[in-house]
Length: 124
Image 1: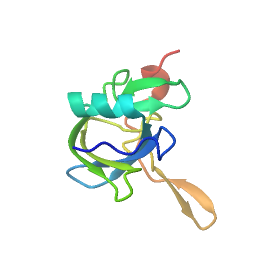
Image 2: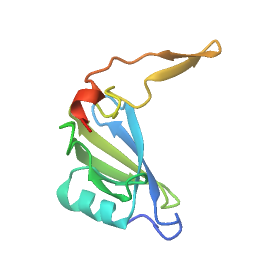
Image 3: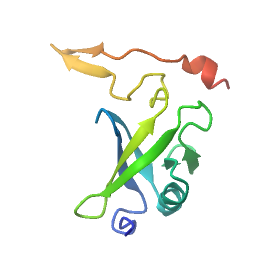
């Protein structure tokens, strides 16, 4: 498999993550070359945290892992689509998907159900 063009993308490529069974969009994250290689090697979704400046394996803290079933690279080689088996919630705020808010009639409505309490899971 050919890797994304990390140089062209400034070192980080955006990664769209979808549930392989439902096609629901779960989240958007970023990968650098190390995250890409670890994901390909292990089959576990691994990303680059822009805030912490380090690699993170999805679910290593919460238990809500993403087992990669298919990897696609876009036509310009600067974005990735992961199709995953999602265990539990994908969102760090406890929702199945990060896209749990909808703009409707000028207001934001919560349309998702929270699956876990982040205050409990991510104790500081």
